Length: 484
Image (tube, rainbow, N blue to C red):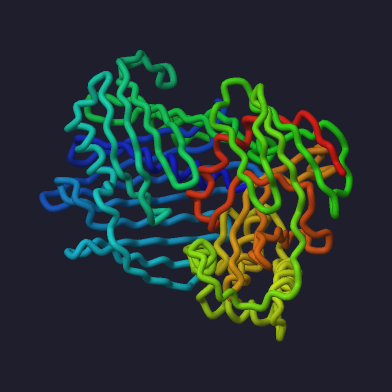
């Protein structure tokens, strides 16, 4: 489960603004009270441009394996906050990704993405009114952040190469504890919206619109970014295993759920108002009283007789054939692998099963050391966990003309890293065959997709797709399971 990716995005979205001409500030990152990393902010201003650089270094454990991640994000703007460009660099284990953007006089954004030695360039319109950190800081100063005020802004996030619609609701003055130093700050609620959901963040600002403390609830955890001195920021981190936090207990042993139907009674935890479960061809959802959800999982089997490629006109299905930053189905390496996977097959049902089995065998380094790789990165490294299998499977399907998407959710296992009868965070693929979305899981192609999968969100594998589940995973329990 790639919870860390969205955490980094959210932390960077809530960038710090500083009034000084050149200043470096430090902050510590906490998860449920444990220090997991630090952040460094630097703002450099000249007569012609303002550079805002934010760096995050984090270390977490995933199933006992330590994963170190660093992100450097630089925004370049005019002194009046007009966007000029950006650079985003992420390093996570074997994965390196660099995204640079330049806004031209015509308002077009030229984006260059470098992944594992492969470079892609695209040109898109700069989102209307979208702001980078300096522009946001100036807007906050303009609004004066008085209690009761509310305003909206569009924030551009380089890691997503897209904008998030944001609403800021200003509260009153609060006495805030900054690791033993108590200061009076202005509380503000920041609501960031994506097509698949939203995230609410509480931030505490000084008079110059420096966010000295940011607090968010996500995936059942309390995450905080707190301003501090350099010595504490760079001090050793605590070891926090995020994988343990992604497990949901099953009320009973379920065993093999292949070729079966399962009805799950799920109960939202107290005060969890944003819990939601999507309905798909493999899952139906009925909301009951008392925060209960009845989720019926009845997997669709791919029916033969549908020829590839897809030649329909459904806009959503056509979109599910397009390349994305994480599903580079138009790249020759992906096309070659897709050809190897299906051979001379022309039947879509047969092709998706061949792709599922091919990816299972192709990814030989099956471990948790990869932060979040794209399909092209997986094609090169042959390494990764569930998301790496899922993105490569989806990209290969799209490359041969079969609509495909990424699914995030839970999977049941009898035993996992010492835990018995649990549902763990997982990612898999759905391909559109014979008028239905069919589940594919290349991490276990021999067993096949079954009733032990609970869907929490679907998308193209982009970080913003996680918004559909961050207010659900960690906020419900499984009360009962009926298997037929």
